[in-house]
Amino acid sequence: MLDLADVRGPVPLADRRIRVAAETGLLRELPFAGVRIGAPVTRPGKVVCIGLNYRDHAQETGAPIPSRPVVFLKDPATVVGPRDTVSIPRGSTKTDWEVELAVVIGKRASYLDSPNDAAAPVIAGYTISNDVSEREFQLEYSGQRDLGKSCETFNPLGPWLVTPDEVDPQSLALRVSVDGVPRQHGNTENMIFDVPYIVWYLSQYMVLEPGDVINTGTPTGVALGLPDTPYLRPGDVVELEIAGLGTQRQVFEQA
Image (cartoon, rainbow, N blue to C red; front, side, top):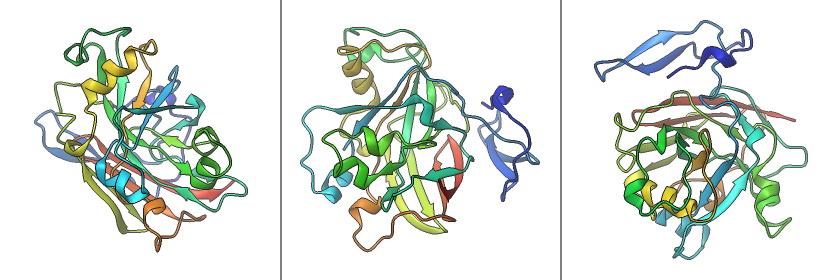
């Protein structure tokens, strides 16, 4: 769904045709001439992230397969629209991409009895998240992930918020290309911890409120795990897609 409440005036878009799901379930294209598309959740109370939630991603980073979800928080102010420009932080040499299925909470959840309770209306819907990360800040400057995850514009979200009855969250293909070169290609069926388990698990340790966003992890193919793959530089274009949820496109610029 498109939330035009957050449109803040015309912004030039290199690609003015945006794919949307028709009521028939088929895809069609509509032109949005110069219109900015805001995130479907513009001001989440919190953004909760799950790290190392795909076996292939854990392997490419040299990390052991986690026995419990790896949880950290990301500054909610990082959330921007799916086609907004993303800033590479000053001093950054390792800005990286991460396509992720994002879960949006629809009803307050605390101490859910089981993963079976993590369904609508607790889950309002699903969307695409780019969990942009600065790896040097994240892994070398601190024992916490915050410095590398909470830089300005580091969480493009959207374009659509798709309701739980429309998609199977454990059967969605994810893709990323950088300057037209394919980098990530995975499927949510390969998650270590599936969506219901993640929501149930988090509810045991924090109260999930309507509008909260959960980034559920990324598959293999990030620059961190590919020694010969360059990190992002000013002018790079990152394109993301999750089947049934639409596409994102960001141009990266120097902060």
